[in-house]
Length: 329
Image (cartoon, rainbow, N blue to C red):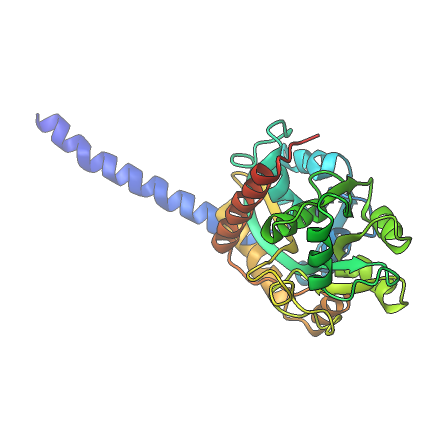
């Protein structure tokens, strides 16, 4: 028995030593990171909102870290192809993912993703969000959300709205709008948001939702009319467009957002370093100015808060998908 009693203190000491070494290793990793160039995968084509947001932050991280931070575009399968590349990467913080709210939508509707969002990623930081805007042709005689709802109720199933495809943010926004308003409208999927914009301008679609960034030039030159925004507050770029929550559907909200992920098992100290530095970048005047021009707002959260936010977005997307019968294509 005396041998067993002697072993217990030794085991406790060994456990304590291991804990200290792990803690020291994580802290050291955070302090020394990054010691070489960092790559960021954007799983969409260049020039879109997600790409612009990623490149804005990458340039500032490069200045802050004294290391190259390179953005690579890997489009395909709604963002899941590029995400899979990061999921399989070494968990050292040198290959990261910048995705959109499509990350949550994919997780909610596609059981065949080439990665497991529950096991393959760690939620690092949010980057920004912006409302989507409900637009119609200026020749449609629809002047408000109330007008659109009245017409939809008078002609159930006859009105159409377009999106960048099944499972896109505009599709989920449109279905959330339809369900909340209790109306029947027909969804028309396209290969991209620009196609839906073009057919809305031409009057072939009744309305569409799109990001402020994409729709704003057409609103400013009079080719589209904005009836409302999907955020709870007015957009500074579209002050005349009321929140849909104030214009006919109380409590309605849907935002397009971007975030950054790392492979699972990335050291916590590295995750916190990236998060902390991104939060610093968001307060820089030129970054705030760039965001304002995009109609976006910074999102400030710790990595733990971001993880809870992502979980809530996945749950909300799952509810919309179930109510609307949306399935992965």
